Length: 157
Image 1 (spheres, rainbow, N blue to C red):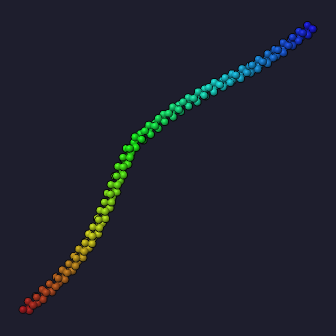
Image 2 (image 1 turned 180 degrees about the vertical axis):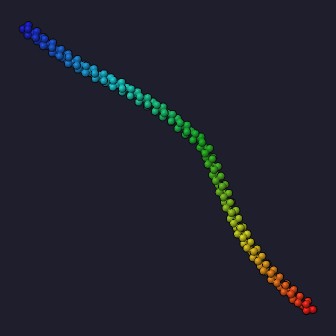
Image 3 (image 1 turned 60 degrees about the vertical axis):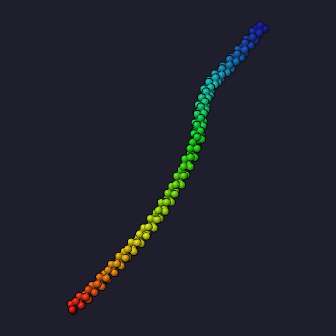
C-alpha cells in the first residue's frame, strides 16, 4: 500500500504539475494578450492624443475664424452709414447725369434743326443767286438790245 500510496502521490503530483503547467501556459497566453493589449492601448492613446491635438487646433482655428467674422461684421455695421451716404450721393450724381444727358439731347435736336434750317437757307440763297444771275443776264440782254437800237438810231441820224 505504501507503494500504491507513493504511486498515487506521485500521480497526484504529476497531475498537479500538469495543472500548474497548464495554468502557467494559460497565464503566459494571458500575459502575451495583456502585453498586446497594453501595446494596442498605447497606440490608441497616441492616436487619441493626436486627435485631441487636431481637435484643439481646429477649435483654435474656429475661434480665430469666428473672431475674424465678428470683426468683419463690425466693420460692415460701421460702414453701412457711409455706404448709404455714398449710395445717396451716387443716386444724386446719376440724376444729374440724366439731366445733363437730357440737356445734351435737347441741344443736339436744336443743332440738328438749325442745320436743317441752314441747309434750307443755303438752297434758297442758291435759288436766288441763280434767279439773280438769270435776271441779270436777261437785264443785260435787254440793255444790249436797247443800246443796239439806240446805236442804230444814232447811225441813222
